[in-house]
Amino acid sequence: MGSKVSRQRKRQSNSPSKKMDAKKVIPSSPVNSTASEKYHTVSSSSYWLAKDNEEQDRLMGQHFAVKEGFGGNVLPKVLEVVRFDAGTKCLDVGCGPGTWCLDMATEYPECQIYGVDMSDIFPEAIRPPNTHFMQANVLEGLPFEDNTFDFVQARLLVAALKVEQWPLVIKEYLRVLKPGGILQMLEPDYKETGGGASLKLVQTVIKLCHMRGQNPHIGADLARLMEEAGLTILENRYSTIDHSEDTKLAAEWIWDWCYFAKVTCEVIGPVVGVSQEDYPQFLKDIESSMKEYHFTTHGYCVVGQKSS
Ligand SMILES: C[S@@+](CC[C@H](N)C(=O)[O-])C[C@H]1O[C@@H](n2cnc3c(N)ncnc32)[C@H](O)[C@@H]1O
Image (cartoon, rainbow, N blue to C red; front, top):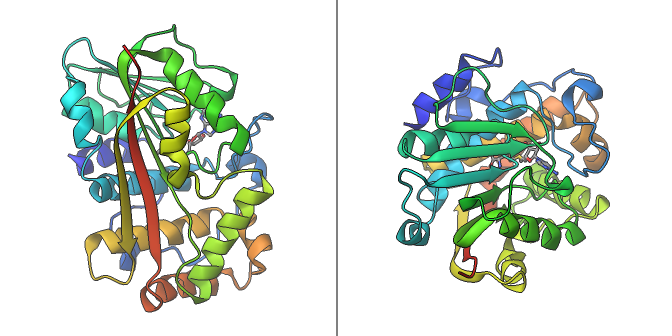
C-alpha cells in the first residue's frame, strides 16, 4: 500500500529515488537551490523548512516511518468512533505532499479526504478520486464551513507555529469539526539526546524553533492544549525510537534526520556553525553518531473528541 502511494507521487517528481534504506540514500552533498525557490514566502508564517522536491520526498518517506511508529494512520480509539465509510469527511491540515491523504484515501475509498497546505506541493494529476487538495493558510482560517468534518488531523507543524498560535489553530480545527468529531494531532518532542553531530543537530533544531518563538517540545504539550480547548482526550500515545537499534524503523529515522539536515542545509549550517565545505562530512557524522550514541526520536499522537 505504502509503496503504491510513493510510486504515484514519484511519477510526478523528478527528484532522486527515495527508499527506506538509510545506507543507500543518505545524501552526501548539500543542495544548491536559491532560498527563493526552496522556501515559502508567506509573511505570516514562521515555517522554516524547505518546500522543494527533495523535502517532499523526505516527507513522503517520513510518513511511512511515522505510520509504523504509531501503528497506523489513525490511533485505535479513532476507529472506535469514526466509521470511515460513505459520507465520512476527513481533513489533513498542513498536508505537505499529501501522503497521509493518499494513503487514507486508498485505505478508505468511500471517504472523502481533504488536504490543505499553505504551499501548493500536493499532487494535482495522479491521485485517488476521493482526495481533494487546496492551498490555504490555517493562520488565516480554514476555507470550510463550521461543522464540516468527522475527522481532522494536523501533523508535524512544530516548525510552523509559534507558541501563542497553537490555541488559535486548535480552535479553528474545532470550528470545522462536527459535534462529536475527532481531532488527531501528532508532534515531536525534540530532546537533547545522542552525542557528536547528532546532538549538535538536535540542539540546532531546538535553537531554530526558539529563535522563531516556536515550542520544540510541543508534542508533550498537545494533550493539555487540546483539553484547554474543550476536547475530551481519548488517547495519548508516546513513541520513542532508539536509532542505534538494528531495525528497519531505526534506519528509516536515521535516513529522515540526515535527509532533513541535507535539504535544510542553508538554515541549519549557519546556526550549527558548519560551512558548506564541511557540510558533507557533518552529514556523515550525523549518521554514525546516531548509532554510536543511541540517539532517540520522541513523538506524541493525541486523539480528542469535540463535545456533541
Ligand atoms: C513538516 S511538514 C508536514 C507535512 C505533513 N503534515 C506530514 O505529516 O507529512 C509541515 C507542512 O505544513 C505546512 N504549513 C506550515 N505552516 C502552515 C500554515 N500556516 N497553513 C497551512 N500549512 C502550513 C508546510 O507548508 C508543510 O507542508
